[in-house]
Image 1 (tube, rainbow, N blue to C red):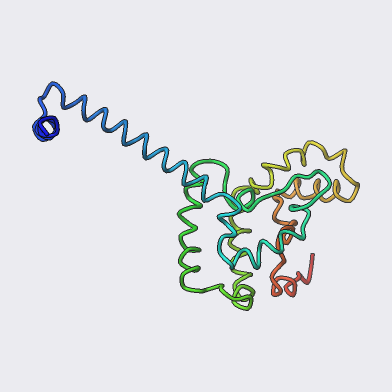
Image 2: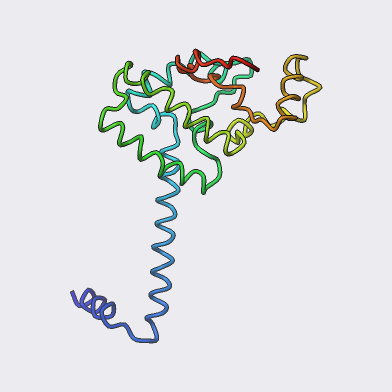
Length: 196
C-alpha cells in the first residue's frame, strides 16, 4: 500500500528534476500505443472479411466481383475490396477510413439494405468511386497493373491502340474500364454518348 501511495504522491507532485522525463516517457508510451492501435485498426478494417461483413456488400458487390477477372483469372491473382477501394498510402488510407463513416451511417440507417435500394443508389456510389479514381490517376489500378504504359508492344493490337490513344489524351484507367469489377448502373448503360 505504501508503494501505491508513494507513486500517487510522486505523480501528483513530481519534482522538477523528474517531471520533464516522466512527461517525455509518458508521451512516447502514449504515442507508441496510439500508433500501434491505429495501425492495427487501419489494417483490420482493410480486410475483405471486414468489407463483406455487412449483408449489403456480401449480397451485392462481392457477388458481382466473384464473376469477374479480378476475382478469378489465369494468373491466380485476386483483387480484394481494399486493393481497389482503399488507397495504399497512409494519408489516403486514413482519409478513406474517415470517408467510410458515411457508409457506416448508411448501414445503420438502411440506405442500401435491400437489393432494390442498392440498385437505386448504384449510380451515386459508382460515380463517387470513379471520381476518386480519376482524381488520383487510377492509383489503385496502377498498383497491380504497373506495366500498361511500358508494355504497349506486348499487348493485343486493339488494346495497344486504345491505350496509346488514352495516354495521348491524358485519360486514366477508369475513363474506359468502368464496370470491370462490378455491374455498371443501369442508368449508366442508357446514357451512352450520342457523338464520340
